Length: 290
Image (cartoon, rainbow, N blue to C red; front, top):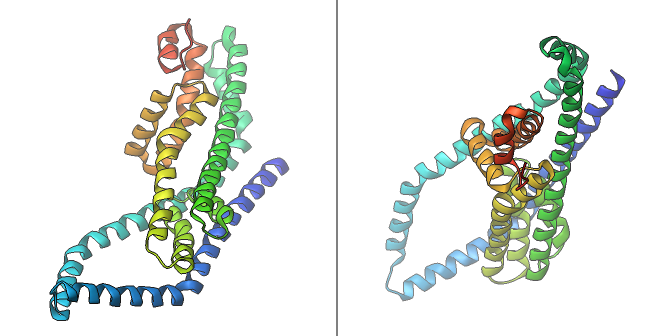
């Protein structure tokens, strides 16, 4: 009981730290907002003057902007609604995970006893071995996720450093950690470096460069780094891992994209230890032949 409570407390501290980073980014952005607003006003005036030289009067510009705002309002509201829905689901999921973990760990002896009752006598030793390997598989998955956050943080930081953004490594790793929060996390993580780039350099291309760096790194993380890093630790080939992520996203959303990965690892483990499932083990494996 004590070990379970201590483990959950450590998890709570970690989640609280991520939440603190999230709030800190929002507050820092709000502190910089007056300067950003001034830049926005100056940029808007410059754009209006440029459009005036092309023959567009201020009245025509205002009508055009009003029309664009009306057309895009529905799309923006849909995006906001989807983002809030995903964030609320994630918040509920984060709250429920410690409850599930506590109950599973507290009744772990009971679950093992039930499995022993269901398993034939001659295979009980194999069952214990599979349970041990299952725990090792989840541990490998967690290590793989930590490795991913490290790589993504380094890539973010190097990109921002090359671009000349102040506090590049702080911004890079904060954005990496905040990707744990779907949709909202990466947006909040990029707000402050984008604002800093705009304030530091008198050019719109630096903020665009920051967005481009984060978008490129996120693409690599979703399609290359995550499948490769996790699949190599779970001994599952990258194609199967990508299919698991895609299927999990369709069925359970963001939670499924994360949880289906270790599920596939456990399935591969069961197939490895079942002579009747050797074909499935070869299919899921990373090129190992029987």
